[in-house]
Image (cartoon, rainbow, N blue to C red):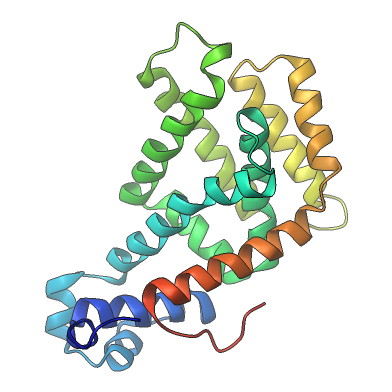
Length: 229
């Protein structure tokens, strides 16, 4: 639980109010007036701390991306490498199909320059660990540049909603094939990764991860969602 001093802290109150409203109402539907009223702060106080609601979004995205690789590893029982990348990717795509407000948050994250840069820095470091064995002559800059491309693909795939023709499985496999090709992953390993995804109930796993994520958000920011799905 947070202390009395933290309850009085306007930054803490703003973060708590925004995280809850972004996920329950949606980022775009949450207005500055909503935030100021819910957090019980003045407009001047909010602007002095975060300037705009984009500043609060950064805190939420940072939390989500700091935890999603750990969640993917948990879903794999501790495995690492290409399989973690494949599952983490599949979970991101599935989560955006399970929750429209999180789709909006992810798309904003991959769109806004500061957030997109944070994601690229974060994921390129992870991807270097996963794919260095297939690209021994690549530098950190090479992995960063590759992630600029795969990050752009991820945003495009998230934006395009699934339908009866472009199913979640087809979307996931199409993205993974293109991304793993970009990192020169051998065809045999790609096939193993795709088979791993096919044998996993991705939607059920995504829903379980969402519950875990919501519980972590509630604990970190000390509030309760009105409903958890």
